Image (cartoon, rainbow, N blue to C red; front, side, top):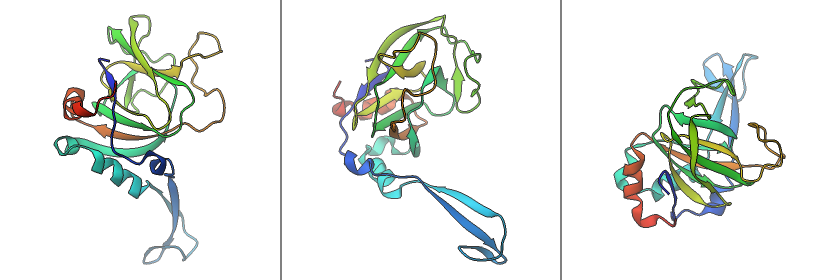
Length: 200
């Protein structure tokens, strides 16, 4: 594939699959934060799974670690064709999947925000009528894929029984989770460092 590749990284995927996002609340006290104190507004903090994110970082070749900007646990979302505005490449560690199809498109890159309204949230959504489907993959649980996030791509279902219009709601309530490693270096640089790990 031109814009993505399945890779084999030595990461204990079942252990990554146990990752949970923890939301912590701390009561504001007179002399700082604590679990007890006066009845003041609480500071809510989002804690990422440290052990799992450290394993992801440790599995990366040294030559691309400086380009790594974040490791996050997130839900797989259904997305219209778009490009990322910040990161240039991503490695997705698929923990739970439900038949999602990641499609890459080729053609003129023209901003379009009539289908969704999240431009400015790290994406630029694109006009579909000037794009042509180029390639796609359907990840399975515990697959690892690296992707060019500056290439137009979307996330849908391989065989969506609904009509041909865009749908942004999942088909059911099953969890669809991925751990993502984001890079601010070109995809070609990430792919070169992981060339010996490419499966397909």
